[in-house]
Length: 152
Image (spheres, rainbow, N blue to C red):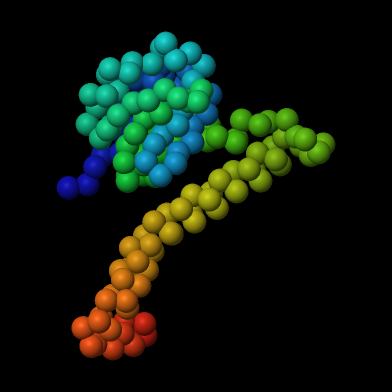
């Protein structure tokens, strides 16, 4: 059964104090990392009770919502269902005199590239790890590993 990330995103946004309380949003491997204007507006207890949220932490000036391995899908849903900016997009002033809109586009492109690479590697690493493991294990049983290395 697929999770409803749109519903999860809407509940999370409401419990962190609404869109207007969020400065920016980033994610790591398992957590949504919110930078909030006022952390006292966030409902930590309510967030912890949402199905799909493992834990809620406040550390390093960030309000962190632990989602687990599905964090990239939840992150995409939060950005899709709100006007919250991804971390890095809030730098509207150009450092080198370039127009703000042009710099935002470059930053957005870099973020999209990073998200693509993250999704690509997350799906590929299981296959790579299992093939390396089998290539190391099968010769111990006297089998050749050549068919594993060359796809049919």
